[in-house]
Image (cartoon, rainbow over all chains, first blue to last red; front, side):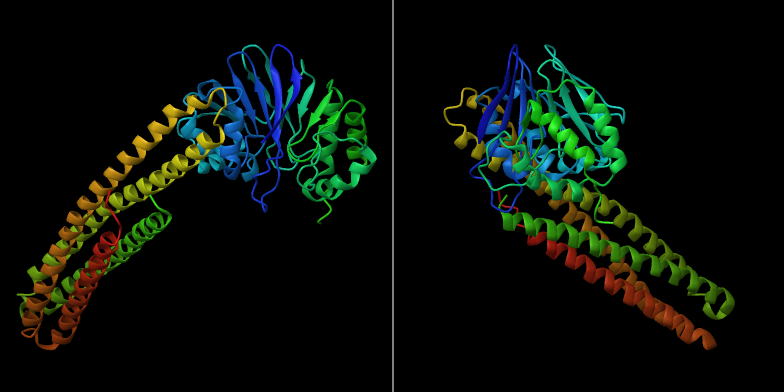
Amino acid sequence: MRMTKIYEGAYQWIMLGRDVHKPEKIIDTNQYMVRTANRCLLIDPGGIELFAPMLAAVLHHAPVEEITDLFASHQDPDIISSLGLWDQALPNAKLHAAALWEGFLRHFGCETIEYVPIPDHGGVINLGAIELQIIPAHYLHASANFHVYDPHAKILMSGDVGAALEAPGMPVFVENFDMHIEKMRYFHQRWMPSNQAKRAWIDRVRKLDIDILAPQHGRMFKGDDVKRFLDWFEALQVGIAV
Amino acid sequence: MQVNQAKSQFVAVASIAAELSAVMEVAKEISLAAANAKAIAFRAGEKAKGFQPITDFINELAKDTIELVNNINEYAFHLYRLTVNEQRMTEACKRFEKVEQLAAGARYADSLTTSLQEVRLRTQLCHREFILQVSELLIKLADVMHPARAARVIAANSRIEASQAGEYLQSLQAVAESVDNAAQIINDKVHKCRSALTIINVAE
C-alpha cells in the first residue's frame, strides 16, 4: 500500500491508499493516519478486504499498542467493515463514530474497542499532542456523517465530499482542477442527496483555514484547488435520482 | 475452522433452532388437546371417569416439554454465538497471518505477535466450549424424548379409556390420536436435531 506523508511537524499525517493488491471489484479508498509521538489515529480505516495491507503499512509507523484511536466518518463497509479485525488486533483503542450508527457498526464486531459516540453537533478527538475537530457533514452522504479537521496542519478529511472514482494508480493530488471535474460530477450529484445539507456544509467549511482537502476516494486537493472545489460544489445540483 | 466446517456449523445450529421451534408448537398443541380432553371428560361424567386423570398427565407432559425446549433454546442460541465468535476469530487469525507476511521488515511488525497468539488461544478455547456445549445439548435433547415416549404410552391408555366412554368414544379417541401424533412428531424433530449436531465436525 502506498504511503504519502501530507503533513510533517510535531506529528504527521499520512495518506494510505492505491494498494496494488486490492481486489479488482472493490472500490479504491484513501485511509489516513495521524501519528503523534505515542498515539496513532486511523481515519476511515477501510473495508475488511483492505485490513491486512492497511495494518501492514501502519506497522511501519506505529506498534499496535499505540494505535489508540479509530474514526469512522459514517457506516459504509468501505469505511469500517474491518472493525471486527481491528477489535481483535488492538489492545487499547477507541472508535469515534456517530452515536446514530452505534447499533449498526457493532454488527461488524466491537467488543474490545471502546465505542465513543459522536453527537450530531460533532466533537473533538484529543490525541494528547493535538486536538482534532469533528465537523458535522450530515447527509453528505450518510444521514449521520462527520469529517475531521486539523486546525494546526490545516487539513480537512472530507469523507465522500471531494471524492472521485478513477482508474487504479491515479496521482494522490489533483493536478488540473478543470480536467478533474468530470471525474467527480456524477459521484456528487448521485451520492449527495440534499442541496440544503450541501449548503450548510459549505458555509461551515468556508470558515475553516484549509491547505489540504482529503477525501476518502480519489485525489486530494491542495492550495487554491480547495477553494475551486468549494465553489464548484456549491454550484452543483445534487440529489438527481428523484 | 475451515470454510466448509463453518458453513455446516452455522447450518446445523440454524436447523436445531428451526426444529426446536416446531417442537414448541407441537407441545402447545398437546397442551390444547389436554384442555379439550378435560372438557370432554367433564361432560362425559361417569362414562369417562378413567380418562379424567389422564388429561392431567397429558397437560403435565406438555408443560415439561415446553420447559425443556425453552431451556434447550438457550443452549442453541449459545451455540450460535460461539459459532459466530469462532468464525470471526478464525478469520482474524487468517488476516493477521497475512499482515505478518506483508509487514515483514516493518519497524513494528513484531508488535502484532501478542494479538495473534491471543486470537489463536481464544479460537481454541471457543472451539472447546463449542464441543462441550454440543455434548450437553445432546443430553438435553435426550431428556425431551422422555416426555414424548410417555405421551405415546398415555395415548395408548387413552384409547382404552375412550372405548368405555359411550357416545364420547369418537371425541376421546380423537384426543388420543392427536396426542400420539404430536408425540411422534416431537420424536422425529428431536432426532433431526441430534442428527444435525452429529454432522458437525467437532474434531479438534
